[in-house]
Length: 413
Image (cartoon, rainbow, N blue to C red; front, side, top):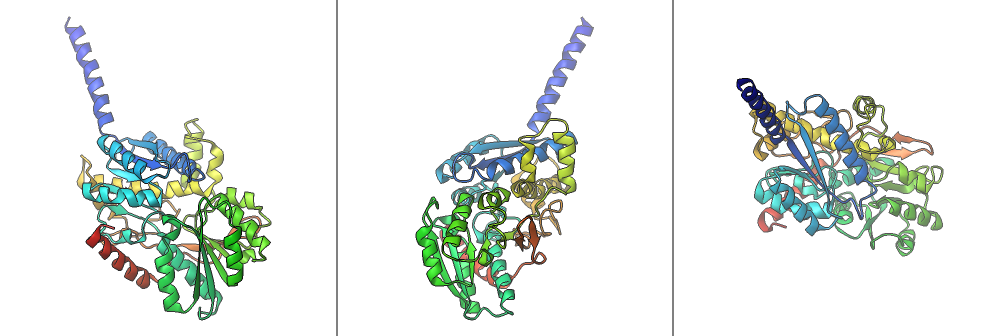
């Protein structure tokens, strides 16, 4: 009888231990567009996040706590993003990621009011780097504002340090993502004396004939494009039809190997991209994932996605997120709270996200950490960096950041 009781107690202890371990999981909420506008990127990024979590969980998780990745679709619809946020909040998630500028903007006021962490790396509103105002929002790495400022600085370098009289066309899908860089472009045009042409591209961007005719008439020296996915392919065809050389084009970071293949590697020669994340898979972390995750048949998707820069982007974002949480637990112990995660993320110093981004230093005042990008050029077979990582016009960008964040502090918009 005693043996039986002891056995029952031991079994109960194991069950309770297992429940406790489960209760102590660190939940990350990925509310992503898995069905509509951003399906060209979300599978690769969510796959990378889950693969990295699998790798870390096999080694004991983060400071002994398992990682749980919760992925849910919002279809790039702000209201569905809010619903996803509220649902996962009830399930104990304290750190959220929307990977969408319109959805991030919609969810941001709620995260701020609740005191929950909203990751906003490489998407969202540029003024959210102001940690004094956006205390719970973390756009770690370059924002669209920083990226477009760096694009302008590179163009300036091509004109011997003067942009007087230079014409820069900006083509963008006419919604919040595409409109995001405009305040910085207008500010820099006034500062540097270049002529800025704004060319909104009606969604869904499949018909760009009219807008490229307008761009041709503008006779730009350079074109900055904020297109996405298939829009890049349409744009390339229209550029050729309008006699606009490919080497005039600088795209937003959201252009990948699939887009190059669809444009045609030879046709894309000379195209340039504002780059946030190092591509390729010759990185120690990726090689470790190939060996220990895919080698054990535990991969979260097709291994071919490891050849896509968007997979690297997922590892970059969550290298920072996981490290911030590790620092939080190391510093302030368990149980984890949003305030502890905030302090952990604000402790990132000279952190390069496992070699995927230029080093960032995040503070309570600066939630971006530096914002360095570089220009890469497609030479017909591969991407070739056109310079080192850099951040330009930082004083000007921060001037606009402070103006816009002050408006948010006053109006909530």
